[in-house]
Image (cartoon, rainbow, N blue to C red; front, side, top):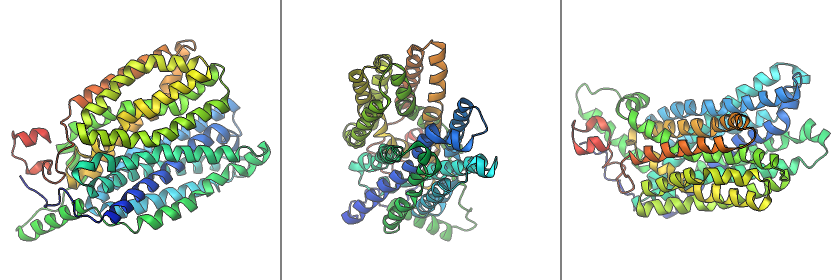
Amino acid sequence: MTKHSSVSQPASHDPRQMRRVLFSSYLGSVVEFYDFLLYGIAASLVFGQVFFANLDPMVGTIASFGTLAAGYIARPLGGVIFGHFGDRVGRKSMLVITMTLMGVASTLIGLIPTYNQIGVAAPIILVFLRVIQGIAVGGEWGGAALMSLEHSTKRRRGFSASVTNMGGPSGALLATLIMTACSTMPEESFLAWGWRIPFLLSAVLVGLGMFIRLRIQESPVFAAAQAAAAAERKSATGAKKPSVPLFEVLRHYPKNVLLAAFGGAGAFVIQGLLATFAITLAVGGGADRTSVLMVHGIGSFLHIFTIPFFAALSDRVGRRPVMISGALAAALMAYPLFQMLATGDMGWVLAAFLIGNPLIQASMYGPLAAFISEMFGTTSRYTGASLGYQLASTLGAGLAPLLAATLLTVGNGNPVWVSVMVTVICVISALAIFLTKESHKLDLDGDRPEPAALPAGSEAANAA
């Protein structure tokens, strides 16, 4: 068994540097998801009229949501691209690139001429920039989560990695507040230029995030692994060149990628449906749209704090018990939650949002960053974790709203079949998590080394 170094618990790290790393991961995630989710709000409000003005309004709305899906499809690609270089070059440099890429793409979206100005080139440019957004956010998560995880002591890894996931609801809340404020202007002004303001503000957020990110140090676990690998190559005659991280993942960790994808899908299904489909369902039941958005915002705000709570709990009792409990709770509560939303009664709608995101979804999502990251060895962790996480996101948040809308039509407006879908997916997630090995007490560079160095048939090999 080959061990990379003796930094499995970097307890001697500088607390000031650790705080800077956590803040950098959080702020970077806020910026990335602000930009990524802002697009979804704009797609529902203005893109159909601005970039697909030649189409019927309903068809234009569908087309704008099609561009939204392009970003989710591109996320696994971003995870593979930046995971490769993050495992070969370093975590920090990739995070600088992903933030720059997202900031440039979002700012340019705010500057695209309309369809009436440049014709079909407008939606083409929009789709291209949306794909760039997807690639950027696909690469961002893995690096940010690993920087927090690999700088942390063993007993706080779950909490530290969850700081990245806190950026999701924070970015969503910020995007909602800013776009809502801009939408209060006269409709003609909002459609002409007001919707562009939130995208242009991205440049300011990226500048702030970059200032913090450039001041952090490279992951000590990764740096030690690189130094050990370099020394090994130097001392070995005819040593092989470093392998491609994606090939390492597909060769040694295919089962872990699948378990990560299916294990995380339940959390993303709840997240995706509550962010989109649930709002439509509640409004369709008679609830006021503004009130629904308000209670959704309350749920998102509380979500920011319950994510690290469940992550910290997983540091004490394990990732699997917390996440399996959340997945089974989601399976049991799927039918009641969607029935509560369908009533249109604001009391029930508020209860559904408070139970759905801050409690059920957070119990799965809070430990998820550490859970997935701990499945892979150091020199392929960025690639493996990014691929598993982004596949889970695409399977859950990317496809669930479309499937839910279809099932709602089949059910003549009754969300019972949507509940069945959520129940099935969450049971599958619980089973996938059950099939993994508990990892909250593993040393990142010791208990889960690169699998190629493990003797076949050993207990450690089976765990990897």
